[in-house]
Image (tube, rainbow, N blue to C red; front, side):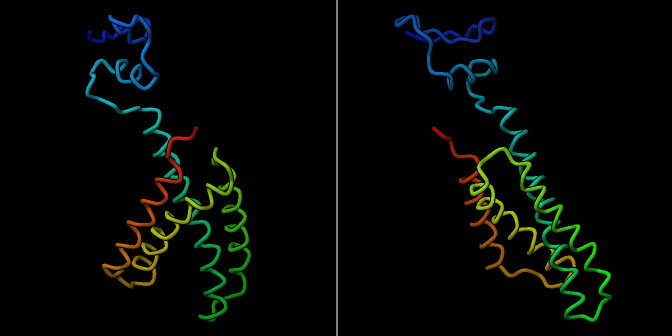
Length: 152
């Protein structure tokens, strides 16, 4: 009739069917609070992924911004050395993601857009418009779908 959660064996058994529910229900029962569906491991993975994407975006932006300063603003050509190092760091950071490379590149685009507009505001002093913010929200939603959708 109703389910019972056995925290010792971490299995939810139906009294009427006498068989375990799917794993999703087991995770809910393990929390001790049937209304709590949060998975701390997934939350930590999402936070680590987001932090890695932000670092990756900063490495790419810096690697492109330094040559821009040299080409357009008359800065020293010595900026090309740290720019090359920053772009090498960018490429290496992309390899640290556990998902397929194409999926990582696609999802990374959403975070890149966000960091690029933050850079626009913080470094160039240009405040993003409401349309910029809307675009960021859409791109982050796409990134979330690509990176965290269930895979079969």
